Image: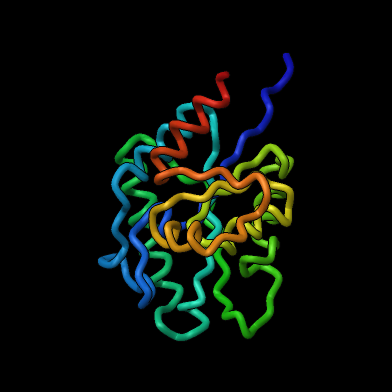
Amino acid sequence: MPTSPKKVVILDRDGVINVDSPGFIKSPDEWLPLPGSLEAIARLNQAGYRVAVATNQSGIGRGLFDMSALNAMHQKMHLMVAAMGGRIDAVFFCPHTAEDQCECRKPKPGMLKMIAERFEVEPQDTPVVGDALRDLQAGAALGCTPHLVLSGKGQQTLAAGGLPPGTQIHQDLRAFALDFLAEEHE
C-alpha cells in the first residue's frame, strides 16, 4: 500500500497565530490567540496537514525574555490549540538578533529548510504563511508558496509592496485555511 504524501504547513507565530506587539510578546499572559487561528490549525490537521511554526524570537537575544518564558508561551499555545482539537507538530525559533547574521533568522530560509528536512517534505509542496515580508521572502527563497495574512503586520506589508512573485493574500489564518483547503479540493 503506497504511503500518502507528507503534507506540512509552515506558520509564522506573532501576527498569524497570536496578537503581535511592537514591544514583543514576552510572557504567557501577553500571548493571546487571534480570532479563528486555533480553529484554523485544527482544520488543517483534520485535512491531513502537519503544522510547524517558524518564528523569529529576537527578544531572547535582546534580553527581553528568557527560554523559560518562551517555553511557557509555547506550552500555552499548544494547550489552547489542543483544546480546539488541533496540534502544532513542531516549533522552530531563532533567538538571534539581526546583528548576529545567523542563517536561521527570517528572511533567510535556514529555519524553513530545517523544517522541510525534519518532515521530509518538498518545499514547492509546502505553503508558508506569514504577516511580514521576511516570512514570505524566507519561504520564496526555499521554493515554498508564500501566503500573506492581513492580520498582524499584514496590512502594512501589503501596502509596502515588493511581495515575492506568486504570493497569495488572505484576510487571516482562518481565511487561509478555508481558501487553501478549498483550492486543494478543486
